[in-house]
Image (cartoon, rainbow, N blue to C red; front, side):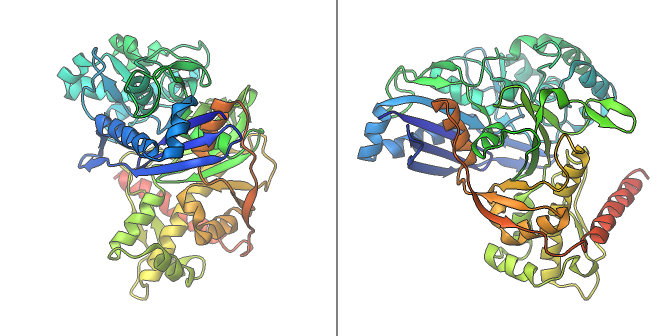
Length: 488
């Protein structure tokens, strides 16, 4: 029986699954990942520590007799992982410094300097909009602030590519990761004009070779993974959101997916011919969010990825003394829609969608003496749902029928309260699919060459009519007020 090892390396968790050729999960391991957050918007991860966790996860599988036999007969290994950020190696393949993650905002001043020139250039070359956490922007930051580390850099990778390198010794990227960086849709190559604009034209050799997601990028080196034979094939793999979309059955143009994880991502599958956004001013390349390479032929993923999500819910529970999730949801559910006039702007980690502002901050607006903890909890849930609504609205139709369902996945998709609020706010059916590990299933699809069969687990239907419309209008008005205040 063929078996496959599927790995999903996120920001907070690493998951490893042994899958049978029939798609059955034989065993699943999950390990907590640590990242360091510091003042100035810094967010980093120890690259070697992540690799050690991968090895420990495989080691725990090898300790089980049945899993050990499966590992010894692997047909292949695939990885999906967090995107963006900068995973920098020197010429010997050693990390130059800790990885700078996608949610790092230290380079926001660089983005302020290159806009709007960068927007015009991205539109011309059909390259994704740059932001503070893009690897090219972070390379510029290194050149300014850590010149010795910049000089040592030989390979500017993403997370998945680092893990593939440790397994196989080969440096390469796939289109889903390269497409979040400087891969031009016009030339099919890296955009040297953006490197010029950033003042780092010499960094072009740092960008890795691009190979198809399903291709074998290399073979496991002797001793790289406990219990895994030398020579086991490793595919290039993909960006985690692309794998999750595949694993959740998002393959048809017009389907909309919300991944409600550490951050909230809104994705819509579109035909490649629909990549250009049509606005009142004509046709333009999206300035906010990204057009990602998908794992479906001739289709792309329109992505709006917030910097805020379930991490904000975790923050809210910590704010009230480490409140349990069950208790927090129970209290918030007592409160009527609108939280009795209280509104929460949830941008405590800055923002990149539905608008781009690394300096954005969160705040409770309309707080009065009659408000209690339950009102504040409800406002946090509603504020995050407002962000999802704004992302979906800003996409326009993109060929999606009015009122079509929205599929949800990720940790917060397990919240009946949040899914209910989202259904009411969107006035659409919100569907939680019966897929426990979308990223793992997407990797399995890449490895085995066939799609995972999906079914709906729970549907949430709108239940409050248009009661959220004035709440949403107030949220947008407060955002506009915040922009005016920031301009002072």
